[in-house]
Amino acid sequence: MFVKRIVVNNFLSYDHADVTFGEALNIITGANASGKTNLIDGIYFASVGRSSRHNRDKELIKWETEKGARVTLLVQKKFSRHTIDIYIDPQGKKRIAVDNIPIQRMGELMGVLNVVFFSPTEMRLVKDGPSDRRRFLDISLCQQSKTYFYTLQRYNSLLAQRNKILKDYRGRPTLRDMLNVVDADFIRCATFIIQERKKYVEAITPYAQREHAKLTAGKEELNLQYETEPVDFNDIAGSLRRLLNEAFTADARLEYSTVGPHRDDLKITSGDVDVRRFGSQGQQRSAVLSLKLAEIASFKARTGETPVLLLDDVLSELDADRQKALFDAVKGMQTIITCTETDQSKETATIFEIKDRQVKRID
Ligand SMILES: Nc1ncnc2c1ncn2[C@@H]1O[C@H](COP(=O)(O)OP(=O)(O)O)[C@@H](O)[C@H]1O
Ligand SMILES: [Mg+2]
Image 1 (cartoon, helix red, strand yellow):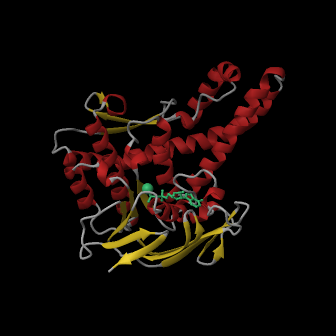
Image 2 (tube, helix red, strand yellow):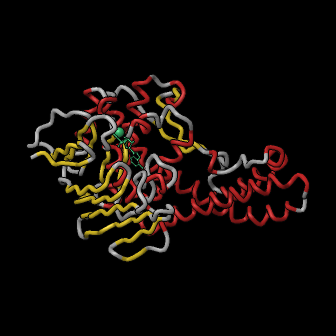
């Protein structure tokens, strides 16, 4: 699939921009702080319904304006085309329409446009804490499945309820009954999330291994494993119930839930080495690239479509070999790259330049 066109109004640094992309390689150039990432963020926003770097939708409205912000995208798939339209009103509330029909629930946006996003933050995916690796799994899974998206939302709200009860528990032991009520649903959602994440990790593992072997000329192997506390995968719900009970006294003291998939991780090893903690920088970068390329390959295998690849400022972080591996892997898919300068010619890429808050195509 590919993004044919994006139109933004009053969005981040843009008054108005209207960009028609090519179906293959697109390069967005411009000085620092010219608005390259903002444009990529518009595409990301239309894909997953949230910005890649702003927590509140209101922050996406252009500063010092009274109007709301709007992002409209035309998406071309193999057998269909779609429009995604998101309006953020001046209060920061957003309204989304897909093919001109307002959607009632965010889940309906999932999967209309699939992107794989790669930025310097993603480069730290392997090295940083577990929350980034959970997000890697969750973003992919949400784009694949509305059920996953809704279950994750529900889980997060149950987790918040649970923590609130734990916090109030000290003076009011009768709250234990309320906790049991919340826990029935909490365990159901947690079980589903763990199962789906584990399945996904197993699905991308062979692709990640293949990419990693290519990147390291067969010298290193890579292994992925979903790391979770209930190790009995035949009875996740039962394990969770037992673990929640065991942890109860400590959790009530901490006023926080220490059991559940919000604590899980993706384990990445090469031989006996835990790449997350002990990998060299080179190993960690190869592992990130392998994970991202595996995300693309498994998406292709599952859907017969290619996702849109967004590469924000990462080329400079990859050496020549890794850049080549990346370009080999993304042949045939729409790729949108930002960088300050490019040596690509307009024969091999569609090139844009951002200047004075305007996006211009270079012909
Ligand atoms: N809500 C906003 N309204 C207006 N300008 C904004 C807003 N948010 C960020 N900017 C501006 O966007 C610019 C950064 O754009 P960015 O896309 O990160 O640049 P680049 O990726 O080209 O380095 C900064 O100059 C910042 O002031
Ligand atoms: Mg940038």
